[in-house]
Structures are given as structure tokens and as C-alpha cells.
Length: 486
Figure (tube, one colour):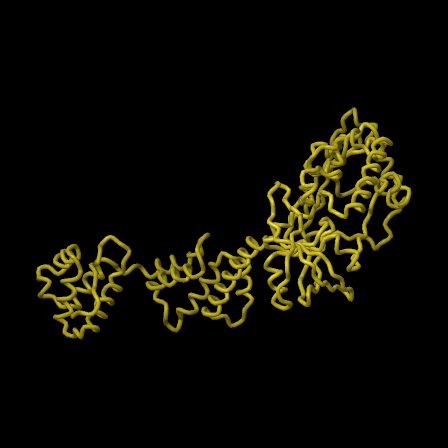
């Protein structure tokens, strides 16, 4: 019984005739077919009707059975794959670059295919050297290309290994950044007890207009208050009004009193920073929970501390099973999507020499663990920041920064490097509009008095001054230096 099988060779495809012949010879070897006549018979009986007709045409006036096995192989090869010009083959090889969506492995395969007809392999043109040169020069990734060009004694194998490793690393990094974001870093989270789940929060209104939405979404962000003339809110929500201040004070005292009497959370809006720039570093600290170190993000906008279910499992490997109790707390995102809370645990927390038994919420979502405000005092975490700035007081506190006159430059003289063949260019002035002449003259006098400009009788270099009036009434001075770029 024959070992294996050989299919027909189909014309009009990209299949290689030489590869088909190699498969046929391996079939003959596996079945101990060694005579040329037997190999010819296997070839003629397996090649298919179209190829057999082509062989009949190529070996005329003889019949295929009269031609030798080698003659039939060579005749079909020359007909299907005529040897191309070596110069043209090298031209295609040298101009082959990595395509936009082509992997490094596919790019190397294409280069090897093109190198078959280039005549590489001699001492003058080693195949490994030619493959290395074309591979490095044709890479699409400029960073990897720069890395390979900096290598000394670079071989094709080393270049290929480095490029494939960099490609795989970049793909893994993209996957990590795509799926590793902490989706539960909510822009807005609302907490409430079951008893007050339907009660609106006192502090949940927008401070710009007293509406029921987030301040950063308010349409009055750039509005000017009719009461205090400041930008960012309207008169209805102005904090400078006595009645508004009194109402807020009363609401705060009532809320504070209710918290002391009932000992429960009021609904409060919690805001955290969104990750806009991936290079921005979060405030991460190492906290020991039940003997297990856990990296946590300090979030002053969160009123409670949160970890994911997976983080809790890591802690339990070191400590044992940690019981969860019903927290009576609901957490939702800014889009009102509820986050599943598994429960609340009481855990022993250590941070910088301080120990405390603290409550910890456990959620199903993946992401960074958060240290909320309820852990700040027990762990000695403090907040420092600017609470309020009076813009009118800033110029009086820093007069040197806001002075109208200029004290002058006391450093070394400024030296401007010019090209060796630089020639002075003197352009005539442009007429100043009649409506701006007085203002321009006053501006020139001011700059001369401050020592910014100095009158001269003659100069080899000159460019025209163009003056336009800005929205606030001041002048903007523009100069054209395109023709003087030296």
C-alpha cells in the first residue's frame, strides 16, 4: 500500500513547480521508487490532465513516455518559471520595504522569496549579508531600525530576533494599555445608605448655576456673574450674596448634625481624575493589609476605600478567608451605571508605622485599589492645597512680576549666529494706518523709554513693522523675517 498521496498540480496558481517535484520525489523515496522510469510514470499519472497536456506539447515530437524524467521536469520548469533577469530580480529585492500591516516574519519571507533569483550566496555577495542589509533598511518601525543601526557586528539572525522581539513586546504593551485601565476610577460616584437611597444630596448641585449636574458639564462655565462680575458662575449661584452664604451654612450645619446623630453616609458626589495623558503619574503608595502589601492610589475625591475582588483574594492567600458583610452602600458611575459591591470587610491596615482596623469595600470591577478619605486620619494622611485665591491681591503681593516698566537684562550679551554667506537685507517700511498712527507713536516712545528699543541713524538690517489692534484695544506688533532667515 502506497505511503502518502500527491495531488494534481494546478496551472494558473502561485504554486511552485519545483516544490511540487520535491513532494513527488519524497513520495517516491517513501515508497522505495528509485528507477527513473518509475518516477516518470508517477509524475505523468499524478500531475493532472492540464499539466499532462502541457507536457505532451513541450516534448513534441516525442511522446511523454519517450522523454526522460529529468527532461520532463526541466521542460515544465522553463515553461512555467522562466529564469528572470538577475539585475531585475535584485532591483525588486532592493526596493522591497515592509508594508503597513505586514509582520516582521512575513516581511522576511517575502525577502527570501525575492532573493531566490538574485544570485546571492557567493563570497562577494553572501546571502546573509544581503538579507541583513535589506531587512534593516526596509523596516517600518523607525525605533527598531535605529536600534539595529547602532549594533556592531550585526548579523541577519540577530537583527531578525531583535525585530521580532520588539514587535511582540509592542503588541503586548498595546494589549495591556487597552485592557488594563481601571474603569472604576469613576468621574462621579454616589454613595447612600439604604434608608436614604432615594434622597437627593445637599452638595450634589452644580456650584455654577445650582443645577443638578456636574460642574464641568455646566453651560455657564464661561459666564460672567452679574453680582460679583467674576467668570465661572451666574448670580443665582453667586457665593458673594449674603442669602446664598447663609443658606449654604444652614444646610451644612444640618447635614453635619444629621451625620453625628445617625452615623451614616449622606449621598455625596465623588470626583476622581480621568487618565487623559498616560504619562501622568498617579499618587500610589504601598499599604499593608492583613500582612499583605497592596499598592493603592490615594484619591481625595473618594469618601471610602475600595479594592477589587482579585486584590482581596491575594490578601486572603496570606491571611485566610476574610468575611464580607452587607455594606448597605450603592456605588454608581457618572453615567448612573451601578457597580456591583460584594460587601464590606474590616481589615487591619498598616501604613508608615500606623496600624488601624478600618472598613474596606470590595467590588467586582478590576483596577487600582483606592484609599478614600475615611482612611486619611487613621493612617496620618493629610491634604495640602490652595483653598482660595483672591485675584485682586496677587499683583499687590508680587509687584515685581506685574510692574509696567522693565528693569533690563543683566546677563551676558546676546550673540546671534549667522551663516557664513549671510548678506544684510534692508526692507523699506510699510505705511501705518491713519487710525493707528498716534497709538503706534506712543508705543514706540514707550519702548524707547523702557530701553527695549534704541534709535539709530542707519542699519544694514531692517524689516517692516506691521501693527494690528487686538480685541482689548492694545496693539500687536508683527515683523516679517522670512527674507532674513540666516
